[in-house]
Image (cartoon, rainbow, N blue to C red; front, top):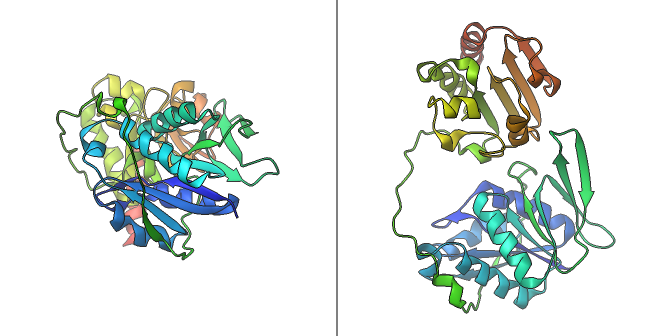
Length: 320
């Protein structure tokens, strides 16, 4: 069976959920071989083996923390040379897409970004993408070289599939470009206790209709009742009502949760581009003609200041 490289996104050995989803997809097209880099790389082995990794290639060096993405590209290139995989799968984060693009260029291969599904094909892996505000789904494959594919979080279920997970050292020789851009400082993000926006199973967002930073407490309360992440439209972010790190849309973050609740968001194409692949979409808006209603599975025409508190209380009642 052909091997499939899976780039491991982890924090000091704690494997993040999108990587476990990639292992599920990798098993459809071959035998997963994980590539874990940096501090705590070897500590990822148990979780990766539990979810199907036959082998775990590891390498730790200060370059991964001290410099930007090039050292990781060097390592993945070394892994490709060592394994000759059927494909390389990378989480579709901002960093992941940069790593994937640089790797594809180096190894002379095609790249597919923001896939939402993956299946085996006669001539290589076939990726599904959702395009044009979810109006169309496309299926495509790379026709040259080893396919490099980035996959959106929440595109596949995390499935346990115990495998050997044999840890092997990866030999990496860093290129001259590896130390070209140095990280000079880091500021830890203040924890809210909520899930990370791009990985959350449920996202509750607020837009222009929230009408002020002081009213985002309604959105946060609903999110907390559901154990959800909080998002915001560009209009709300530009107005200074919520941080840019929470923006969902074409110029913000792309999310693909099981449930997306849009409150006071009109549904402009720029916002839809960031949440169109959500599995179930619910909108609350007092304008019955708002474009968001063309996209939703369920719509509530009403004032969010009446609807959202009632919804929050009903959820709390049912959970309590």
